[in-house]
Length: 185
Image 1: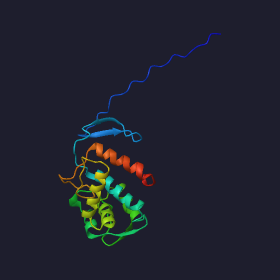
Image 2 (image 1 turned 90 degrees about the vertical axis):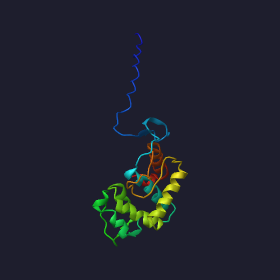
Image 3 (image 1 turned 180 degrees about the horizontal axis):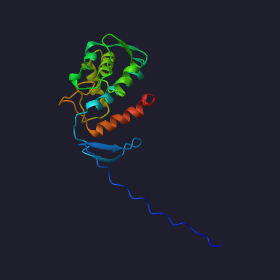
Image 4 (image 1 turned 90 degrees about the horizontal axis):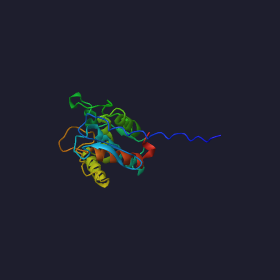
């Protein structure tokens, strides 16, 4: 009997990068941090609701440090409530002034619904004021090496002084996954 060796198949060709209708984007391997493909990854763009990634990062740090707990109740301020106003053009959880909402529910409202009201309520609870929280956001951005990023509010409202790069957004997302696996779900 003759021994038959199966023919080795030619390696599959690598497909070209996807066509994405965006000014700036990046595809990064989360495990290695290696950039697979990108377009204008270092261009500054308005972060919009991607700002909430940094808000989550700061809140998760406060949880990890034990300064707050998921079950803590937050009293919704008028400022947070006003973020749901239709004229602002943002998303909302539609929480009422003076109501008490848990940190966990506010996080879900921020992450799932992109609620600006929930986001501001979290920022005020963690730092006292949204302005102080924004200082914390920019401090963490610096620590993470996000050199093309600057925040002016916690929710991502339009402002020419608020910007992020695709590379920085990917770095921030990677830090969230790596540093806070317990909250990734």
